[in-house]
Length: 66
Image (tube, rainbow, N blue to C red; front, side, top):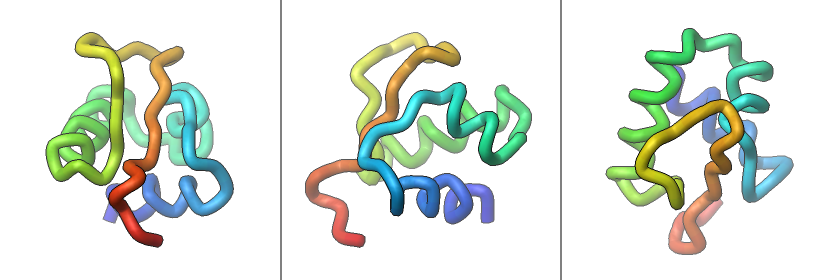
C-alpha cells in the first residue's frame, strides 16, 4: 500500500526529493528508504546516489508507463 501512495505522488511531478515524499506521506524515514530502494530495484524509480538522504532526488523511470 505504501508503494502505491508514493507512486501517486509522481502524478504531479516526474522527480521528487525524499524530503518531499516524506512530508507528503509521513512514512517513517527508515521504512520510506526501504520502499524507495525496492521501487528502484523494480526499475520503477531511479535514484542516482548510493547513500540516500533527505535531499536525494528520486525520478520516475522513463520506461514506466502511467
